[in-house]
Image 1 (cartoon, one colour):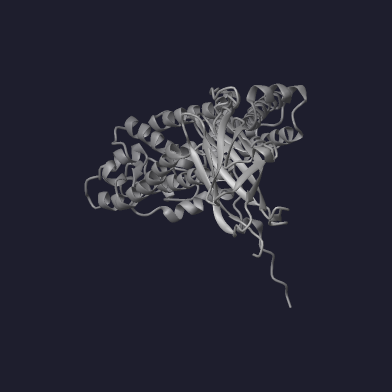
Image 2: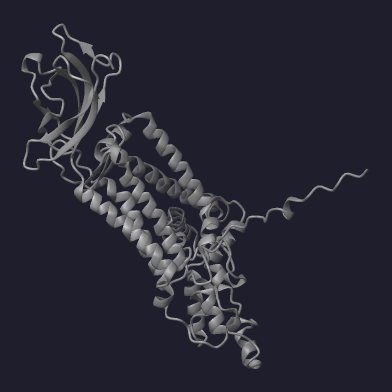
Length: 480
C-alpha cells in the first residue's frame, strides 16, 4: 500500500513577503499623523503630570498604586471596593469599539490601535534610514556590505531605544514617576520593574519592528470579532469596481474610448498599504481601514483628470445603489442609523450612570465582622459581650474624626482596644487617617436578659461633609 504524498507547506501557508509601503500625503495620512502624535504624547507624558491631592495622597495625576490598592486619575480616586467603576469603563471601551466598528469599520485598527501606532512609527524610522519604498527594496536585495550593516545596526538601535522607552514609560504608571525613574537607573528599583521593562522592550521591538502586519492579520483576534459586527450598511474602505473595471493605462483608454474604467492599474493603492493588500480584491481581513489607499488613488485621479472616489469610504448598499446609477448617500445619514444609535445610546447611558455614581458616592464607608469563635462571652454579672472587627474607611486625602455609634440593642454600650471599658458608651469618636482604612476592635456589652437580635453600627464624619454609613450585624446571646 502506497503512503500518501506529504502536503507541501506552500499549500497551507502563504510565504511571508516584507511590506515596504510607500510614503503618501493626503488628508487621511495627515489624520494618522495627528492621531499618532496625540496617542504617543499621552502615553509617554501622562506619568509625569502632577495633580495636587493634599499632603496625604500621591501627587501623580494618573497612578495605579498596587501597593495601597488605589487607582488615581486626576481628581478621581478608585478604591478596591469600587471596582465597578473600572468594570464600567471597560464595558464602555468594548461598546465604544462596537460603535466605531458599526459606523466606520476597522477605524480603530487603522488609527489608534497600539500595534498600528508603533508600527507606523517604526515605518517612518525605516524611511529615515533607508529611504522610501524602492530604496528599501533595493537595500533588502543588496549583499551585506559594511554600509548595509551600519544602516541596519543604526536603525535597529533606534528601534531598541523606542522599545525601551515604551517599556520604561509603562512602569511609571505604577509608582511615583520621578522616584522610580531615579531608582531604575541607580539599580535600586524592584526586580519586577526590570523584568517588566525587559519583556515590553522585547515585545515592542519584535512586534513593531519586524512582525508588524502579521500581528494584525494572524495574531490579533479583533479582526475576526469585528467581521461579525460589520454589515452592508457599515462604512468601509471600498474599491468601486463598476467604475474602475476593466483596468487599462491612460494611453489604452485614449486609444479606445469607453472600453476601460478609471483604474489605470498603477498599483499605488497597494504600494502605500501598511499591510500590503490589494483593496481592489474586495473586503479582506488584512484591511485595517487606514484609508491611505484613498489618498493614493485620489492623487492619481487628480493627476489624470478623473473624479476622485474610485477608492473611498462607502457601504456595500451604497455601492450597489451607485452602480445602478443612483446618487451617493450623505455620510451623516449612513452614520445615523438604528444600530449605531443603539450602540451610542447604551454607551452614553453607561457613561452617565458612572458619572452619577461618582458624583453621589460617599467618602465614608463602614464594614462590620462579628467574631465567630466564641460568638459571645457571658460576664460574671450576667451581662453578655460580643466582639466585632470594624473597618472605618476614610476616602478623603486628610485625617477625619468619625463617630461610631450603636443603633438598636437598647442599653448596650461598647468600647475598643484604644478606648477602655471604663469609657464605654453608646458612641465613640475615633480619628481615621487620611486615605486609609482603620481597623477597630469593638466590644459590645448588653445587660443580663438581652436576647439575640439584629442591630447596627453607624459611622458619621464629624466635619462639614457630615457623611455617614450604616452596617447591620447580629448580637448573639446565651441560649441561641
